[in-house]
Length: 71
Image 1 (cartoon, rainbow, N blue to C red):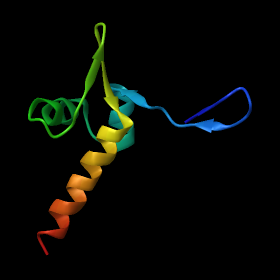
Image 2 (tube, rainbow, N blue to C red; image 1 turned 180 degrees about the horizontal axis):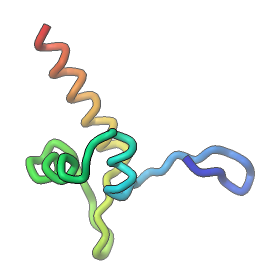
Image 3 (tube, one colour; image 1 turned 90 degrees about the horizontal axis):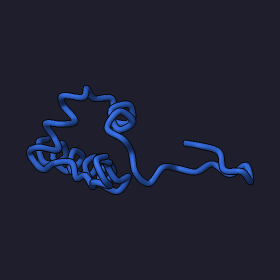
């Protein structure tokens, strides 16, 4: 999170892969594997690849659904 000029905390809308690695506590290799197999969505702007915050939320929800189905 970053602080806006007004002192408000702002959550990123797009994460670089390195930032997503920290958010998800996963290695670069695992993040790129998830992207490659379609479990984690990305967007591109120019040469840069970003992971939308919504894609991270969706991925965590997917993990929760999968964990719930294996009781």
